Image 1 (tube, one colour):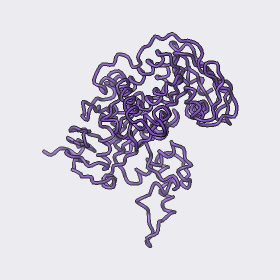
Image 2 (cartoon, one colour):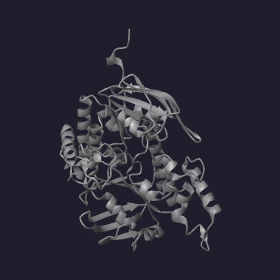
Image 3 (tube, helix red, strand yellow):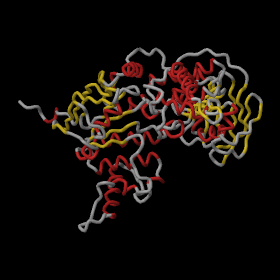
Image 4 (cartoon, helix red, strand yellow):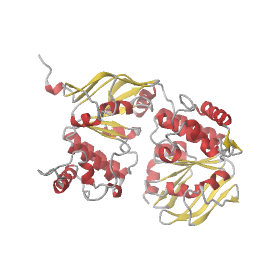
Length: 500
């Protein structure tokens, strides 16, 4: 008797293998996806998640293994083949043309045309409105995508998938840049898509939201599927242990540091409506968390401290000495380092080697007579590779080829080589898996043990409560409160100040 159609999964991947020079990224991965199901795919950076999704999306051809849709074997040589088979991948970096309107982006590559072969703009606009209505949202289809919010751009990507009749939707870190309210709206839309029979593969490092949105979880480790579980059978602790392959007793490492005298003092810092009379103090050996909702002015504040933007007013002091900071160079020379929120665009030159990236802010120390002392640069970098446990094939490996956690360590290494006494971490663990997060947290603890001071911006409230000695909360450019008794603080207490 043949297998009933109801029991045939929407998608089945069998024994998928993919290798790159020197790396076996996938080692025979198999998984299934049902119609109307959200399957979360979890794993540490380098576990193979991105490679598997690129195979599914046609960006990579598998070396071995098969893909089936509705029980029929399919072969993809390009993303166009995957799209034709009903698969849409929404990457963390959206695939939109900023200057084109929402409707033009939705039908890009599959334009609706008139009998004469011209683009039927009115039909595209009408169909785009219908797609947005299906999603329960109201977006002006004539607005260029560059004028849309991140959340709206993501919805344009979803509408584009529906326009191509996608039945399988892959979402890669879909909430990374969204506010809490936008995340809730996205989850409602995912719920509606489930009801319409779409199968959704959801990739995220934010474990709390997995419990809200997923039906089932598949765990990848070292290029293999090491197990699957229904969401109701998992806890946060067991989820982390399945990802990292070992028992993780504490998500946040403990530290015992004697907090010393005041190091950095910021008084009445202001610039326009983004930053209004912000005052912050950080002491030796202390981690101070600066938190709040997206748009609260946190990043704008630290950019003023670092000299990346010019402040209108305010005083910045280090060890009691007033600093004249007109540019990042002034901040660096004073002993302040900034690990930017976007390490890929602002923290690293991805096309250059990890060794070159390490040397960039240290050229003055590593040069003589206008010539770079390559041996010294290489020796110093090797010291930090060992100290920070940076996983890189060799010093000449491109920064773009490292995992997120190792990219963050390279950024940290270049600032440690400057002997910065105050380090600003802007979203230090965004896009990093739980195992690498623990390593970054451990490094932060070691730095404050050495007497350095850290100002940490974070949107993850569990991270704020787990790592900070004090918490400063911002809302609409202003400091709305400070929490000193972090041990007894709650996420609700932080949120009350964040929405003040």
